[in-house]
Image (cartoon, rainbow, N blue to C red; front, side, top):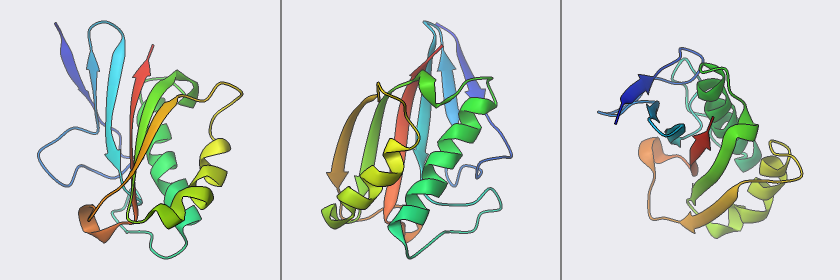
Length: 126
């Protein structure tokens, strides 16, 4: 098995001992969870739609570093600080995927890195 790190300056740098994404043999890319940090490391707070947009843009940037798009995503996991954000996040999320959105799980959790209200991770194929 091969494992190669994927990194781009167009998404925030890892804030711990992990890679932005890993390309694994078998044509899989495992994208680390993205909180709403800008590539410069500034946390977007407040409006959950803006936070969701930044998190999804970060995933998109990592995929684009490999010449891929959001269409390559087959599974996402969304972590929310509250399920009260569910409907608003769905509105934003739907704009990033076509007629066949990826499989997905969504959970409310007790806390997220940097105090964010959302984190999204993904698995893509190429």
